[in-house]
Length: 98
Image (cartoon, rainbow, N blue to C red; front, top):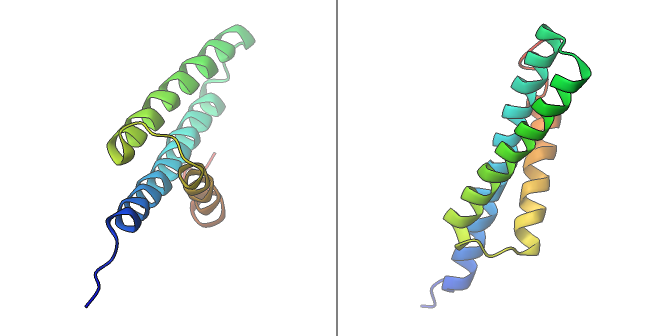
């Protein structure tokens, strides 16, 4: 009886982790958007907040990527991240109401 190839198991694991990463970033983005709506900051403060959010998002994505594939970037990781973002927008977006 033939088992599943280790490469396939690794790719499925990477896909699921990056799918979760996309959904996680969207959770944080929705919270950040809610905070911006409630506080209505000035343009300079908004610019600084946006930069800090995307730095935070890059660190989170990097840590997910390092966890699932030791930092190796692949096409299916990008696709999984995009699918995670898409699933969040289609299924859960709007949970945190303005």
